[in-house]
Image (cartoon, rainbow, N blue to C red; front, side):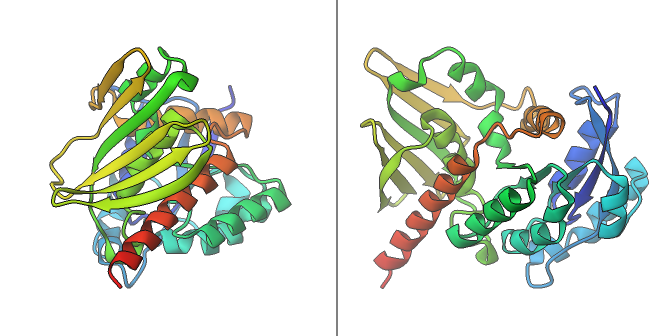
Length: 295
C-alpha cells in the first residue's frame, strides 16, 4: 500500500491534533497505517470563538509535538496526495472546497459537509464536475459498538431506531449541525436512505428529531439538554430489542480514520453522496420545524 502524504486544511479544531496523533505517531496504541499528515494550512473563523480562541494552541501542538510544517494551498497541491478538510466552521466548507476541488485529490470533509442543503449540493456538484472523490461523516457513524451490531443484524429487518445524544449548540453553526449531527449520523448508519417525512417534538428533557422511512421504519434522535448523557441507540426488529451503548475502548477517531485511509486509497467513499445529502436535508428540516414553532 502506498504511504500517502496528507495535507490538512484547518487548525482550529481538536480533531486536527487528535488525527495527527493517530496517523503520525506509530507508537500510538490505535495508530492507523497508510499515511501521515505532512503539511497543514492554518485557518480559523474570526467570528466563531471556539475557532479563533483555540487555533494557536492547536497549531502549536501540530508543529511542536508532531513536527508538521505549515504550508499554503499551492504547496498542498504540489506535495500532498489527499486532503483532510478540518476547518471547524461548516459555513466555510463550500468556499474552502471550491479552492481545491480541481486538484482531483480525495478529500475528507469533517462534519458537517455544510450547514444547509444548497451548499451541500454545490459541494457534491463540484466534486462530480472535477472527478474529485469526497467523503464526509461524523466519527460516531463508525463507533465500534455500532458497527459491531450492524454486522450482526439484517438492516432491512429494523423497524424502529431511537438514538440518544447530547445537544450542544454553537450559535454560528445553527442548532443541530454542531452536535445533533452525531446522533443523526448514527441514525442513518442504521436505517440508510429513504426518509420520506420528518417531525420535531420538544420536551422538558430533549428535542426529538423524528423521521419515517419509505419501508415503514421509524427513527428518532433524542438530543438531550443534559450533555452528560452518553451516546446510545436502541434498535427494534419484529423479534427483538437491541440496546447499543457506545464506549471509547476504541477511540471514535481511530475507527473513522481507518475508513478515511481506505477511502484515500480507493477513492470510493463508504458513505454515498446521496446519503450525506439526505442527512443534511433531515437536519435542515428539523431546523426549519424548530424555527416555525418559535414564530
